[in-house]
Amino acid sequence: MGSSRHAPIEISINPEARVSVALAAPFPGDNRCGRPINVPIKIMNDSFITARLEARLVANVPAGVRLDFRPAPLSGKPEDWREMTITLAEPGMKDITVSFKARNDIPDLGGRDRVHFLIGCRTP
Image (cartoon, rainbow, N blue to C red):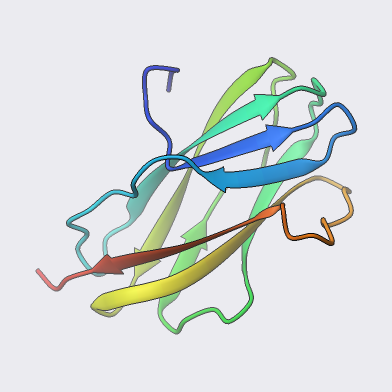
């Protein structure tokens, strides 16, 4: 992965190691139900931490939605890239919220560690 890619999700980790997440580009379109949807994630690491980054579905998780994000240590470099996959079992739009955190970090009370988006799929 490299900086020439456009990531739908951008994560900023400030010098105090607080995680903030934002939508930065359109999500992949023309998704088929039952197939993983690859979502690139750009990470701007201003704290140079090497902690493990984790992600999970939160809030009202729709039925048939699965998130796969392999937690791995960050490199400590100013820019990192990761990828998560979302699999939708049923056609139609789904309202999804994903929370990110660095290992052992306290979740952000203001919700800046979460990203909220709509994503859908169609049957083959």
